[in-house]
Structure formats: C-alpha cells, structure tokens
Length: 311
Image (tube, rainbow, N blue to C red; front, side, top):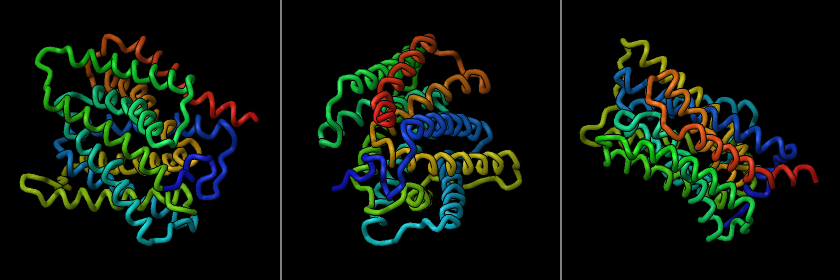
C-alpha cells in the first residue's frame, strides 16, 4: 500500500503551494456541477442514461488520451496499473455515475448534485480508519460543516410529497462508492505515475465496463444520429468529463483523498443553482444557509493545505 498521492508530489509533479489544491478543487468541482446538469438535459432529449454515460465517457477517454499522449505521459501498462484502472473505473466512474444519471429523471439534477456532496465525511472516516489521515480538529469541523450543508439541502427534497424512495436510495448509494474511490485511488496510486497519465486509463476502463452493461437485457446504448441535440450533448459531456478528470488527478496528486472528496460540495454549489435557474427545478428551501455551510466547510478543510504552502 502506498500513500504517494497524498504527499503533494505524486509522480514527481510538485504543485505550486496552496493555490494548486484550492484552484484545482474549485475548477474541477465546477465542471462536476455542469456535468450533472448536462445529464438532466440528456434525459430531456430522450437519451438513455446508460447510452449518454457510456459514449461521453468513451469520448472523454479518447480526448484525455490524446492530450496525455502528446505530452509523452502515457503510463506503463502492467498488472498494477491495469488493476488500478479497472477498480478505480468501477467505484469512481461507472457504478456511481450510472446510479446518479439513472436517478436524475426521477429526483432531478439538483438532488443528484447534492448527493455528490456527501462523500467528505465517509472519505474522512475511511482515511482515519486506514491511517491515511491523522485526526485534525479543524479539518474534521470543516468536513462536518460541508456535510451538514449538503444534508440540509437533501432533507428538503426528502420532505417533498410523493418522493420516489427507491431512486432517492439509489442516488444516496452513489456517495458510498465515490468515497471508496477517493480512498482507493490515493492508497493504490501506481508508483511513479504522473497524475494526468492515470486519467485516460481509468476513463477507458470505465467505458469498457459500461459497454459490457449494454449487453444486459433491457439496456440501451442507442444514440439517435438523426437527432443533433443528442449528439451535441454527448460531445459536450465528453469535453466536460475529459477536462474534469485531467484536473481531477492533478488534484488527487497534491490534495489527497479528503480534499478530493470536497469536489461534490463545490459541484453542489454550482449544480443546484444551474438546475434551478436554467432547468426550471424548484429552489430548495435551505439553499442559502446550506450553501454557506458548504463554503465554510471547504474553507476549513483547505486551510491546512494553504498554511503548508506558505511555509
């Protein structure tokens, strides 16, 4: 087991001070919020969730692979990296996103964006249990605040009449997988691998897993090529996801699993207002105070990284 990814120098790439994790966190989280809302638009355009997720993930893998290959940073393919790609793809991309994207039609993009904000506490507790993180009162307080903000927003959804309990449960299962993925990617980081070199392998493995799901009875990978809107949404999602994961692994390299887990909180701050303003979803009653809690939590959790960067 290695914790190379959590020392800020994974793969020999030293990120410049505190600005790196904070800037990467904000940029990657914003792309995550956009991705969630594109999935809602895809549902409205008649795209099956599996088809949208599969082809956009495959497109992202190709885009990221081309960028990484041009940099000469493709990873060595051996048993360690291949295992890493498959496991990380399953728990970080394929399974949770399939749950989230399938649930969007039933619970809305705003609620799914909130669910993606839940992993911080699970990740932090897991990191403590695995001794990948030392207990820090300030960081624990920040994680608690971020989770409290996300929980307050979600509670408003759960109290709505005729709430679809099955799909709510499916959306809430996604954060457990995301937390496991946050820990796995850091603790099993392939020795010597650069952060951006790992993104195309994980996305490619996720696309293959999703293609395999398309063989299941009732599953559909069909995109209507006569419908420009469907094609455009897949291409947009591929670009957003590709950019997100290029930044994602850099953040993983310099920030560690708990910092990475706060992506969902940033995604919720971006995704919920977009869902309300552009997609016409209802405004959660607790949006203002909950957003403030999430912002305060992110600030506290990243404070240690900021102080370390100044020393």
